[in-house]
Image (cartoon, rainbow, N blue to C red; front, side, top):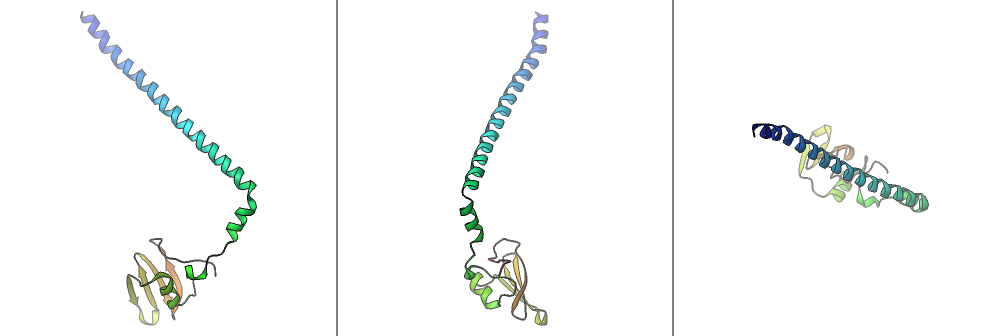
Length: 129
């Protein structure tokens, strides 16, 4: 009887280990199957985009409405029209002004935008004129 318990103590952990390896293997198979499905969908999307290159190019060349954003060189009035009232304001005298929009800021020199830090990602700014 003691021998039976010893065998049970030795084989039970091995059985549990083997079973857990089998379940991990199934999880990996499901993961690979999911990746293959995503890959198939991406390949189909690429084929669709290649077939519709004229539509893609028209989207790329579409310009934003100039009332939707400001840019380097825009006036303070333009920034206020696009962004509204700032959450904070620093007047640095002859060094210009800083308009704060959350953690983002717009630097002004001589009444025009000289730079910006779009830390919050909330500035409606464009690098194109």
